[in-house]
Structure formats: C-alpha cells, structure tokens
Length: 578
Figure 1 (tube, helix red, strand yellow):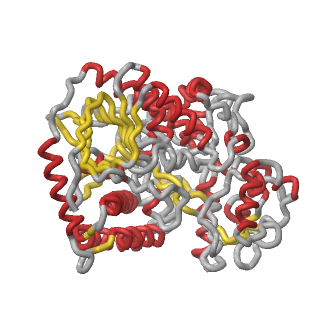
Figure 2: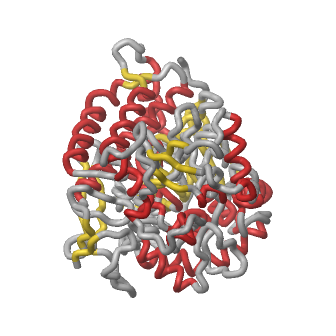
Figure 3: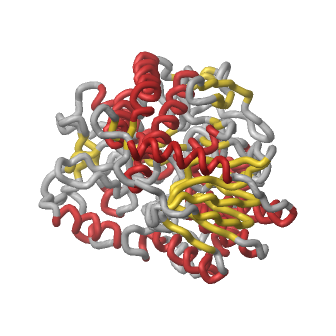
C-alpha cells in the first residue's frame, strides 16, 4: 500500500496513553497554560485498565471513602507503613510516601473534575465501574482545551541531543505516518497484562511504554513483579472476567476437586463460621489477593484442581446479598445470560495477571534519565514494591498523573521547540512498508506470536515459578525474537498495529523473565518454588534491566531504606531469612 501524506504535529506536552494517568496528567499540564496533546492507539479513555477497574480508591480519608472492600487508614503515615509492609520493602520509600501524603487531597480534588462517585464507584457506577473516574476527567480535559487524538500507534521516541523531542507513529484511522514533536513527553501507557494467557486487563495492555523506554536507553526496575487477581473466571464458554468487587463474591468459598475448602490451609482464618472474606480472614481480599492467588494455583499444581482450575462455591450466598450492590446484580445477570446459574453450582476460577508493578525508573517528579521525558502510572516502577494494596492503583493515577503533568509543563515552558524527526520518520516509513509488503507465505503472523508469548508466560512465568521454567521461557522468547519476530507481516495499517504490539509484548516478556531469573527468592507477588522464602540477607535489593533487544543486562542495587527497616514477619506467610 502507499502511505497518505505525513502528519507533522507540534505541541508543548505530548501524553502517550489516555487512561486515568494520562487524563489526569493532561488536566494538570493544561492548568499551566501549555499546549497539550493526548494520543492513544485505541479509543481515548475507553480501552484503559482504569475504566475496567473495580473503582476503589485508597487514601487516608476515614469516614469519606467506603471501607467495605479495602482498608481506609486514619493517617497518611499508617497508609505509608501498610504499603511498605505489603510491598515487602521493594518500594522506593520516597515514591510511596509521596503517594500516601498527597492521596487525600487528590481524591477530594476529583469533585472539581465532576467525579461525584469517588467515595465508592463500585456502588454507584454501572460496570465498568472505572468509567466514573475516566469519563468526567476526559470531559474536563476537553473543556480545558486538551487535544485528544485516538488511533495513533507510537513506535519510537525521538531525541534531539540529550533530550526527548517527541515520537513517531502511524494513525490507523487515516493511514497516515505521524511525527509528533514535543518539548516534553509523558509515558502513561499502562502495563502489560496481555503477555499472559490468563489476565484481567484490557487487550491494549501490551507493554508499549516499557518497549519505548527500553529502546530509548532507559533502565527499568522490578520487572519480575507481576500481580495476579484471584477470582478470574475459567468456566468454559464464559468470559474471562474478574468480579472481585462484587459483594456476593466476598461470601464465596474456594474448593478443590475433592470439595475441600482449601484456603484455610494457606491462610489460617480468624473464625470458622461462613461469613464475608474480611470477617473470616481479618482483612479485605483486595489487601491480600496475592496470597489467595498463590493458594489457588498451588492446589492445581498439587493435582487437586478441577479441569486446570479450582471451584468457587457461591451456592450458599443469600439472595439479599446478590441484590446488595450493582456489581453483584451485574455478575449474576451476566452468568445467567450465559446459561450459568451461580446459585446452583460452583463456577471454575483461576488467577489472571492484573498489573505490572515494575517499570520505568522515575523520581518523585516523574522524571526519567532522559531530559523532558516523564513516566507515571503503571508504566513507572518503584511505587508499590513487591505487591500492591487494593485501591492504590487508582490513587497512583491521580497523584502521579498530576505530578507528571505539572513537571512536564514546567519543563516545556522553558524548553526550545524541537525541529528534528524528519529523517527518522522516513526510516520508519521504509520499515513499515517492508512489513506491509511481505507476503503471508513464509512470514509470521503477529497474532500467532502473541499466542505463543501468552501461553509460555502463563505456563512458565505465572504465579508459581522456578529456575527450570524460567530458563526455558528465556530461551524460547529469545528464539522468537531472533527468528520469528523479524518475519512478521501485516496486510493493512490496522494490522500493522498488531505487529508493534507483538514486538512490545515480546520485549516486555523477556524483561520480566530476565528479572525473575535474577531474583532467587520469593517476595510479595514473586514466588519461586525453588526459593520459597524471603531472603533479606541477600535480596533487600532492586533489580534493574537495560541493554538492547539482543542483550538484556540485569544489575542490582540496595533498596533505599530511608525511614523504615523491614519487618521480620512476611505478610505473605513466607519464611524470612534476615
């Protein structure tokens, strides 16, 4: 095919990604009077994990935020200490302290943007609950004069000297190559849940931001830490969705193929009587889901699974509980519409990837090692450590989205407008044309490579890992990168997007595996069968990855312990070797 005329756009601040982080960054940057453009490879705001989230916010706002599904702490200091304990001390303490200190004000500020349901979106917003956060911010950004541009696939960050100068990409709506020149760029692309066969993320979470940053020469940190959501449906013929925010599900019982209520073996309950999860185990599910997910896959690993999953028994849940909230009503209706009655028989469930906790190295201003380049939200690492408390993800979008927007705007206000990128665009067009011009015969389809990555990562790099499986995954991913990925083809520009998603997924998967191989211990959401203990003697360290697609290098640095030393007791039931 022939490309249509190039589109060259100049702006002050370019934001890549339109989830909660990108929209909040856009609002803040525009407040400083700079020109702001937000791009997204899909539909603006609609395909983000923020929109499909449970809608819970955690901040020290007792008496304001709903406490049914997550703990709301009395002070930012309590929140800070709980997040460190839960993150098993891999957190950058400055980043998590900033989050917990600023969270209350940023949550209350949402009212200014028209977010009236922030107290408990899962009670007041029809599914998807995160729409209550995304839609008002999107409308407010438009009102301020931010330009929101869908369908643009970013393929490369461009540089001018030692600073970022924008990005290259193509528009799948218009078949036009795009050069976006910007004084400052914010990566707000989210994570990479799609690298796993089982996930509870949107199909757009393919690791694009990790790939853009790594290829620009930046270091990424803690990429081995992937969080898995427990109650993701695994019933044949039903959608692979998680309904953990559903009130009825907090009364469900996990059983293995023998009917045994197995969770009590892994997490001794506070009371034996059947009641809500929080009353039985002493904490909300969203604040300990990593341990629940590990228990579920451990049962399957031990041969006590049922068709490769476990059973979630909701048959005893009273009718009034099913009617107690929007999410429960929605869940029951969807299941019944698909011919499954959860009041009569247990449903198959198995964990799925929900978020990446590692990412681009940033400081508290969201600055990266490249001048003018910022990162915030799930694409950035260091905030949550080895595991994330429920509600902290959405709070991260507004706290660090605002910080990224502010500092990017301040930088742009004193920076010169870039004038580079034309030569790089021509090089990219030749590369894109080569992929578009390849015949299907003898080439590799992007969707086939995606499926290989997803199965391999779930089988070998999921909630339970070991050295042998990680080494096998590492070798197979390297083979895909060397032999298959270079031969991908695309018959249309829209399919060309899939090629770049497959490339991002492949690189991100390799970064996760390299880091998981390096961390020879278990910590938080990272669990290794061959090292089933937390090793504080040797592993109070963060893992950093850098290099190129041919050679990925891992290095470690001691954890920044500013105020709090690690507790000798693991919240995740691990032996701690101190």
